[in-house]
Image (cartoon, rainbow, N blue to C red):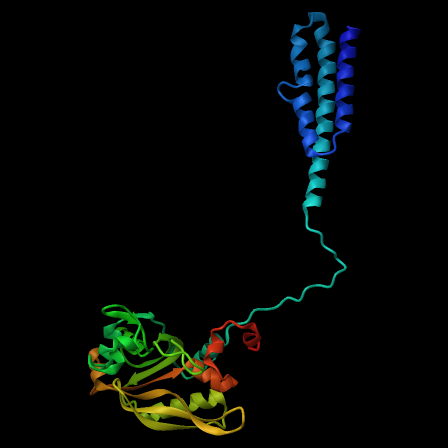
Length: 333
């Protein structure tokens, strides 16, 4: 009996001594395989209790289970300690005495800021906001806007055609048709969005740019309403002292038509008239295309280039700066 108990005690001491020499996870796994795995020495020792004489089993089993529990508890504690040590060593070093890094807040792009301001100004005048597709069919981009097949604006070289009858919209005037197709007067709506034209890129031209379309339709609408709205907008956006003018022009979808020019100073202080966009009274043919009675309803529309508005307001000399993603430029706004 004493020989069996002595053997059990020696096994436990040897296991605890070997465990004390474990320094890393690899050594710990080797210890587990040697002593605590299914074929380990302690597991085999406990499993052999059944071969002992009946009178020895109780005392030997009690001692064997006690030794196994002690070794398992010591193993579990060491395993947890090694995991904590490993987690700390794997964590990135952080010196709390270093000065903090400045946190830079993002800002909306200057074009988006300009669109927000435009929408807010017209919202105060009772205009809703409309959005439409940038890929358009010829009907909405040309035909319904009274632009016939021979008009130079429909030249394939002056547009980005997707297929024979579909193109990237060349103007936000398409929103006039889409709004009037789904609504009856009175209508007061502005529609900001991107348009596409294959222009040669320079300081004032880009193949993709933003426009703001405005449309007002009701009974008794006149050029006086158009002029008043533009005047209120220009003074709200550019300032009370801004000078502007109408200049006669031609657009297939408005009659009469005009251009809006602003009197602005350049960086050297020289004043000159600068075109902002086109406008006019909605042509009766456009009303007939959407099922409106041109004898009952009248309306006006205009389209202004949003980059052009932002360039004149903030003194930006080159339209390409809006799209180059140069933070030296963008973070000024």
